[in-house]
Length: 271
Image (cartoon, rainbow, N blue to C red; front, side, top):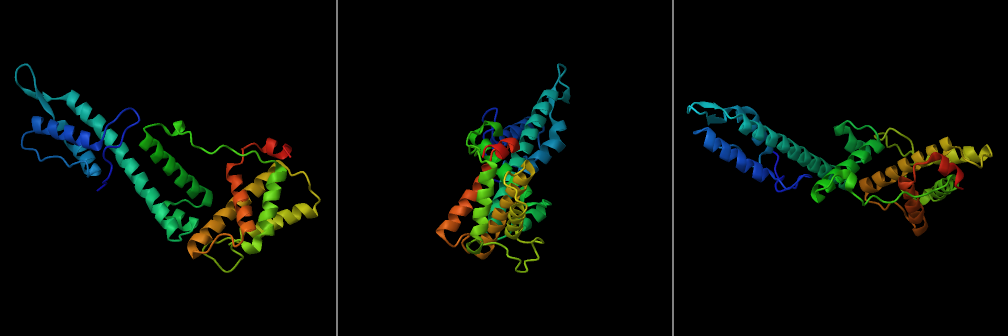
């Protein structure tokens, strides 16, 4: 039983499961005497199934007083049942997001949260959580998702900025809660900090000053994965992600890469 989706506005006007359930009940009381009352708005799947199975029972009297199918009423009812499927889908979205938030709160890693949903990457589960949150926010505000105007502005970061952020994180390695290869086989991957440090060292050893677009993209990806690794471990252990003020500052600066303007050419030349 899906419950809780009542009195939620639709983008094209106010309509609720309560309204629809009431109209369905009136139609069947009028057109099918003796039929059991349909489920109420607190049982969306039951109400949808009722309409699917019983809409054809709606009848009217023709000019000769003979009962004939009430096609207009049947169409109206099916249209409303389709609206109910949308409400049910949104309720599932709401439940899924609340469960994902609860899973994060009790220390489940991104990988653990994604496995039941068959999402295999950190970015994938982050995208799912963000999409669910935006869908539900748009529904609550009675607007389309595209109409939401609270997206943070992108940040212009040059290739030099990206490199400096990464180097700052590596410099604070000992004060950040990373996976230092301590046998956490569940994650199935080494420390992203170690990988980032190796990447920066290789660039330095090769004497590369001006990073290519590919190098910038690689560093951005590694930093984003590192931040997720740190957040996962903080949630799982209850320990702070950063042990010092300067490490916290490095961590927050690293989060700017989540909002970095998606322009490889610009990022490689701005600095």
